[in-house]
Length: 139
Image (cartoon, rainbow, N blue to C red; front, side, top):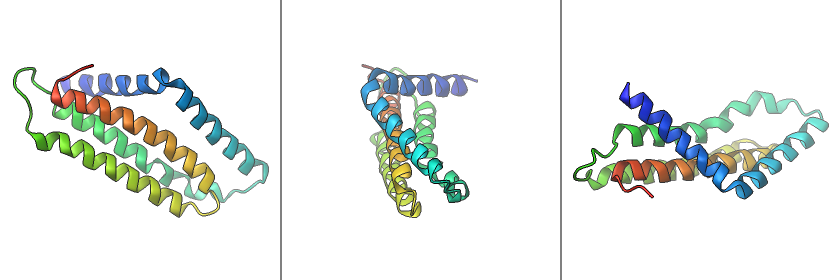
């Protein structure tokens, strides 16, 4: 039960990054919504068939939070260095998944670009929070 509570607390902290730096979040959200409105106005329904792959980078962002909850610092001492390296590997994997999604979404690349940029923005926040959880160094 403690793991679940830690996970949701870390998710709450990662989402607070989106609201704390609301300017970046607003620009990415408005860009995404504008691209969706443009595609809907053109009545291009091919988007529905491919829309689920857009959420692959978001799954990686949530896996960083899970790793941070699993490897939470006990408060005394510190975790091995490799536990923090996993966060960096997941951040790189999220970036590569974002590029892959943009590449796969031919015809919808602007929508995919803004969608994965917003997810990557959340992913940076989740990496930051998960890293603090692992190291035990909170700002």
